[in-house]
Image: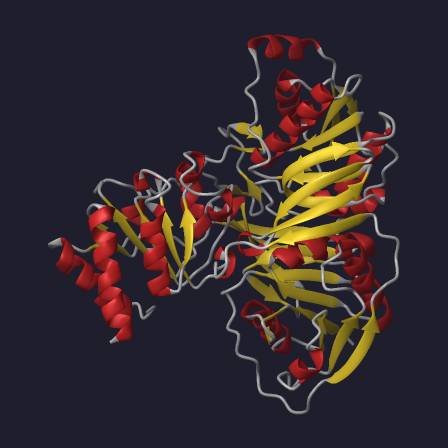
Length: 256
Length: 316
């Protein structure tokens, strides 16, 4: 199988963030990681490769020079090759999807493309579906169980209120992974050593023949939300404190 | 002229509250307002929508959501009717449908907005799980937005005349993916992203069985039950219940955190709750700095007391 996994470099989930220049996240001192949902996609991709003899997994990322780091992690987890689409620009979802689609095509016809259900920086949660539409192939997002056999993918998605949807997709298809799909492995020491020796293929959008129009969506400002004033601790014996809490919820906060 | 269309989701014969919120926002904006529904009860709904110019009723799409058919139908409707803005509640359905439609149209899409200005085509959206707010401008010929539930009042402005009901036939397109089955969740379970009240448990719940304690409290409060990542990773609760940066972002009017320390990754998932209550044994737990009201104590003692007190207050 010709397997692809699209991953993004994001600030660590524990990071405190600040803004510079009105619309950018201050990058100095940030620790960068693979976006958590992309780790499930990576694990699923590597498992598929291990199950199907003669398969390859290519990891693709789009981003500035520093984004190379996530490809090293992916290689250490067991992917076979890596492609970096280098761009410093802010691109809209359509252009990102077109860049990824073009990068995939440089490595042949895909059988399946995996990615995380959303990157935890922009939090849009739209890329897997944009990629499917741009490539004109089926896509499912928020996938918690996946089986691939006989030219189809069986995907289970969590929908609302704990309900699940079972979906059958013709291959090739795009799968947006979420937590629950698997337990991502840690890169092995040997994997890390091997990863250092692999050459990452690099392209610019222009080299992929992708034109970059003015984005249809632009971040005008980025700001920190207002912090809540600290609340109060209700003292006293448990029964009294609970009674006072209920009174406050009803009379002061008016939420009961 | 600009035409804003709102996708209405229907549950148990009525328009979902979150959809009414999106419709109210559209009706307070510029231009003409239309509504779109795939629900069979469209004719009955029309009577509840004075002030809406047109209600597009899609027929023949089947009872089960099929992404290819639904996306192609909306795409065609937007093109044919000259719709310039498409709005919906941020829901499981719009999360799946809107990106597909936007990609087909080359439209701009902003998901999970906490504010939308339709005159300026600007929206405010939490990013980095709400650690920051982005003000985004959508500049495509057609722009799509999904509105986070519970941020905009669902009161529809007064209007006269019922909408014109226009039947739209679902697109006949080759289907590349098929929804085979929808497995219902537990009956009566409240969807966390739309819940008005949430009771949540952390690692201090100690095991899966103890979550029954929160379920009981939730029944009294008509609440959804959530969990911290620590509780989900320890397998006390399923992932569908996880609140936080790598789980659900929730926005209830009341959030009761039981035995949750309040790590940033959890906090960002629930910080826009109108009122946060923390119950924790550890007086140093960071959650107390973020909560409106806190009780330092053992949740296994406090939660049953709270349930009893609320039963009395709410029924008395």
